[in-house]
Image 1 (cartoon, one colour):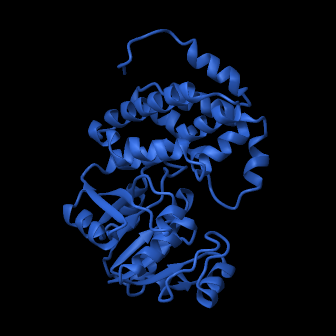
Image 2 (tube, helix red, strand yellow):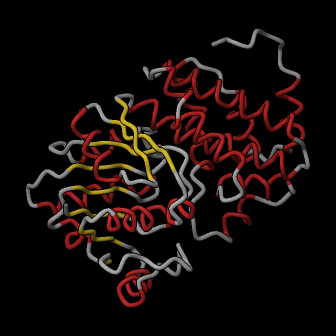
Length: 332
C-alpha cells in the first residue's frame, strides 16, 4: 500500500515509521526543510523525534503534492489549526483520486469549533474519512511498547481499512462507528490534562488527581452525549484510556504545561519555550463554548480557561470547584 503522512511532528513521524515497518511504502511531508533533510540523509527526525532511527524506506518531502501523488491512504497529522489548509493542499495534489483520509490530530478547528473529521470531509468530499485516537505517546509507540487505539468512521469499510493498515503485534487497533465520541475524547482530555498538571505543580496529591480525572471524564461524557456520542465510548480507549494517559504521564505535553502553570509561571513564557503544540490550551476555550451551545456545564474546563486566559490563580480555581453547590454524582 502507498501511504502519505502529512505532518512530521513526533506523532506523524512515529506513524510513518510504523506504517513503513508494516511493509507499506510511505511518504512523509514536513514543513521544516531541516526535518526533510534529516530524514532523507540520516534517517532520523532530529527536531521532533531525536535519537530514534527511522525505517530506511521512509522518504520525506517538502512539497505536499509530491507526498500525496500516489497515496492510497493519507494520514492527516498537523496541529488542529492547520488541518483545513493542509486538506486543501492535499486536494490539489490528488488529481481527482480518492484515497482514504485518516485523521490523527487531537483537537477542534479553532475558528469554527468543528471536529477535524468534519473539516476533512468538507475539503475532501469525495474521500472516506476515519479518525485514529487513543492512549498513545509517540515515543512509546516508536519503541514498540504494546499500545491499543481506536479507528472510527461512519463508513465501516474505512474503519476496517485503517485497522488493517496500522495494526501489528505491538499496535492493536479496534474499530468504532462513534466518530463524535472518539474525537471529543481525544480533544477534551487535553484540557483535563492541563488541570492535572496544575495540581502536580501545586504539590497536591493522589486524592485530588483521582477526583479531577474522574470528574473530568464525567464532563467529557456529558458533553459527548449531548452532541450525539455513544456514552460507552468514554469508558473505552478513546475516553478513559486516553484521559488517564495524558493526565498522568510525564510525556504529556499538556500535563507538562499545566505543571509549569501550577508552579506560577506565565502561559506566554511556557509556550514561548516549546516547538511542539499543547492542543489543550486552545481547546479549553472551545470546550466551554461548545458546552454553552449544548446546554452542558463544564466546570473544570471553565476553570482551566480562566487560569489560562483570565490570570485566575490556580488555587482559587480549585477552591471554587470544591465550593460549588452540592449535588448528586450523576447530573447534566
